[in-house]
Image 1 (cartoon, one colour):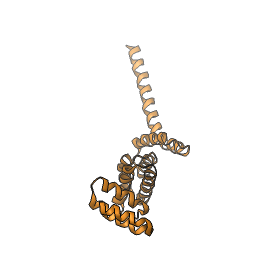
Image 2 (tube, rainbow, N blue to C red):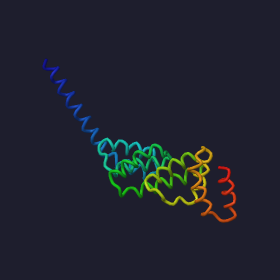
Image 3 (cartoon, rainbow, N blue to C red):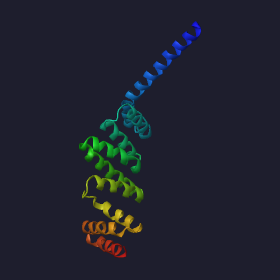
Length: 178
C-alpha cells in the first residue's frame, strides 16, 4: 500500500512538471517563432506562433500567425487570423492590407490567379476602394474567366485608365469580350 502511494505521488509530481513545462513551452513559443522568422524558417515560425496562440490569443500573436500564412502564400488560411486580429485591434488593418497586397503581387508574379484574387478580395473587404494599381488587370481577367463579368468590368475600366494608351487597346478588347 505504501509503495502504491509513493508511486502515485511520483506520478502526480511528474504530471505536474509536464503540465507546467507545457505552459512554459507555450509562453516561450512566441520568442521561438520570432527567432525562426528571423532565420527565414517561416513554417517553423508558423508552428511556434500557433502554439503561442494556445497560451494567449492577443492581437499581436494572432497577426503573427496571419503574417506567417501570408509569407507562405496561403491567403485562405491567413484570412480568419487577419479578421480576428483586426477585430481585436483595428490599428492592425493597415498591416493586414499591406500583407495581402504583397501576397497578391507575389501570386501574380508566379501566375497564381486564385491566390491573387483571394488576397485582393479580402484586402478590398477590409478597405473598400483601396488602389490596387496594375493588379486590377489580372484580377479582372480572373473574374472574366470565371464568368463574373459584373465584377470584371469595373476592374477592366480601372486598368484601362491606369495603363499607357498603347496597352489600353488590349484591355478594351478584353473588356469587350467579357
